[in-house]
Amino acid sequence: MKKIAILISGQGSTLQAIIEACQTGFIPGKIVTVISNKIDSFGLERAKSADIPNRVFLRQDFTSNLDMDKAIGDYLEDLSVDLIVLAGYMKILTKPFTQRFTGKILNIHPALLPSFPGLHGHQQAIDAGVKVTGCTVHFVDAGMDTGPIIMQNTVPVYPDDTEDTLSERLLPVEHATYREALRLFCEDALRIEGRIVHYI
Ligand code: GRF
Image (cartoon, rainbow, N blue to C red; front, side):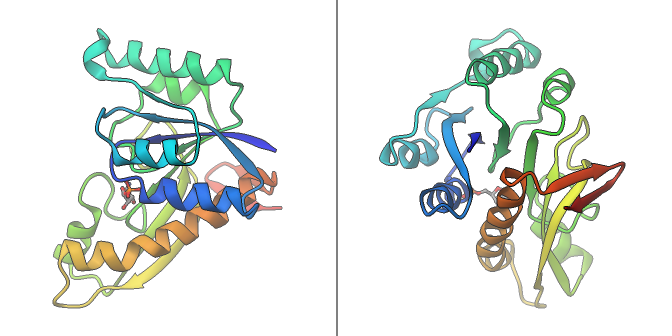
């Protein structure tokens, strides 16, 4: 049973989807902690409701991003986590942190990487006039949204779409995609070869 840490910043709908998938056994893993960098993340309430240990790490309590990430890393190492899941964690991880946990950090991005990286992926897709967008689950490396891609799924984009209508259409697909990708990771069914992630 893999030990999972989940990092959040906001609503936590993705966290909730993963909590439920672990509770049903679809994901053969145990969430051992939820970490937020925001004191008011609703996701913390979701963790408490599910009796999952949770902690807040506030940037203002540290002298640098490096110190903050080291403290988070030390905490996660003490828990011997097998997997670190970014679920709407709106903070770039420092390079030492991503190197410390290489191959163990996953993220979901609301666009078809390498298209539309960074913030406002939905709006970038709308502005580009694409007819299809989607989400990407990937390993996290030292770059932003640049690690090996694990899984992608798509949704249509309509001419009258706004960031809200598109994110509403995409969010359930994100949750389903993350559930599948995390299941594969917890079953040791992923193998990275260079840029390519194989399902074994
Ligand atoms: C999702 O759209 C995800 O792709 C992005 O942030 C959102 C997470 O929302 N990284 P929530 O906090 O899980 O509801």
